[in-house]
Image 1 (cartoon, rainbow, N blue to C red):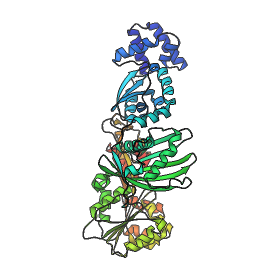
Image 2: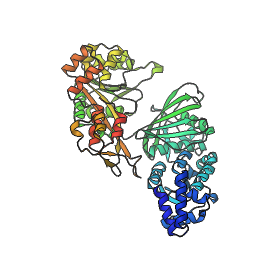
Image 3: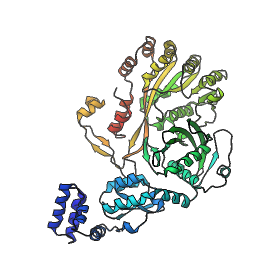
Image 4: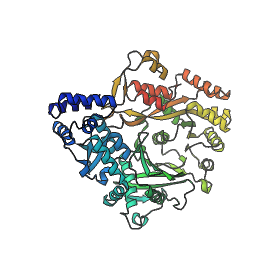
Length: 569
C-alpha cells in the first residue's frame, strides 16, 4: 500500500465519508486485486466521486475539477505529449503566461509534479480529479491533437526573430520574401516555435522524425534526447520543406541526404544552425544542430578538465611546432576545446589558418577555409594550399584519409603547429588509427606532441543531489583504488524543479597522452594499442575513467554517469 492510499484512507475516515471498516475493506480489495484504491471505492459504490474529490480538495486547499465539462486549451496540450500525460497521470488544462493548470489524481506525489514542471518548463497550478477521469480526459483531449496543433499555430504570437542569412556566406535574404509575404503562415509559426523553444531550453540539437502516425520532435539537452511536441503526421512534409528552404537545400529532393545551414537573430542574439536531412522509412528525418553562441567566449579553464590534463594540453598547443590530436565521438565538445585553444594561442605575430567542415564559429584574426567537396576543395587540397600561404599554426577540422594525414604530419615536421581531430574511442587508438590509415609509424612518432580524448559528463544538480555509500565491490569493479573505497560517500541524482532528472549542465573529461621518448620508441616498434595504453597508465596518465572517478569523488557527477560515458581501463 502506497502513501497516497493510506493518506486518502485517513482523510475519508476523518471526514466521516467512510467508516473505518468500509475504508479498510477497500484497502484490502485494492491490495489483493491490484486495483487502485480510489477506483475500488468508486466501482464498489463505497464513496461518490464528488465526495472523494471534495475531501482531497478541502484538505489540501486545492480546487477540484470536473474534467467531463472542461476542454483543455491547445496551448496547454502542446506542453506535453499524450504518452507523458498518461505516464504522469497529469492533464494540462490551461496555460496563462508561464503558469500551467494541471489536473492530477495524486496531489501528494511531489516528485511527479516536479517532473511535470521540468518537462513543461512551466510553473504548475494543480487541480484535483480522479485517476479514471484523468485517463479518460487525456484520451479525449489528445484524440483531437491535429485540431489542437492547428489552433496553437493560428493563435500563437509572432516570435521575435528573423532569418538573417541563408548561409554563412555573404548572401542576404529578406525574411518576408522567403516566406512569400505570409509571415503568419501556420507551418512557419510551428517551425519558429520549435526552434525558439529549443534555443530557450539550451538544447544542442533538434530531431524532427517521421513516425507512422505522427511527427516526433525531440530536443537534446545535456546529452539526452527529450520528447516535446508531436505535430500531426500530415504536417511533416511541410515542416521539412520549410527547414529545407531556410537551409538552402533542394526541396524537390527526397531520396538523398542533404546538408545545409542558416543563421537566425533571436532576441537580438545571432545563432548559427546546421541542418542534416536523411531519408528514412516513413519520410525524411531532420536534425538541426544549434551552435552555442557563447562557445567562443569560453576559455580553457572553464571547460572542467583535470588540472594535470589541462596543463598537458596547454603545454602542447603552445609549442612552436608538432601535432596535437583531439579525439572523441560527435558531440563530445572537441570543437569547443579547439576553439578555446585557438583563442588562447592566437597572436597578431602568427599566421593562423584553419580548414574546417563546416566553419562552426568565425574567429577574428584567423583565416578560416570552408571545405567544399563538390567544388573539389577537400581537406587535403585545402591543406596543401595552406602550406604555400606561409602559415605558423594550422587547425585541420578532421583527418579523414591517408592524404590529409600525411600532409598534416609532414607540416608538423617542418616547423608548423598542427591541431586536428580524429574519431576514435581513446587517445592511444588515435595512434594506431593513423598507422592503420597508412601514415608511416616513424612520421607519427616524430610529429606527435600530444594525443587527447574527450567526453562530456552531466553535472549533478547541487540543489537536490543525494548522498549515499556504495558497496566496496561496486567501487572496485568501476576502477576506484582500494584506499579510496574506505567509508566513501558518493552522490546520485534525485530531481527537482531546478534541473532535468537530477542533472544540470555538462563538463569535460579529458585524457591526455604525452608523446615522450618512451612512447615514441613504442610507436616506432609498432606497439599495439594495448601496449601503448599500459605504458601510458604506468606513467600515471589520467584516463577518461579516472577523470570521471575523481569528479564522482568530489560530488560533481554520479558514478552511474561516469560508467555511462567512459570505459574501464
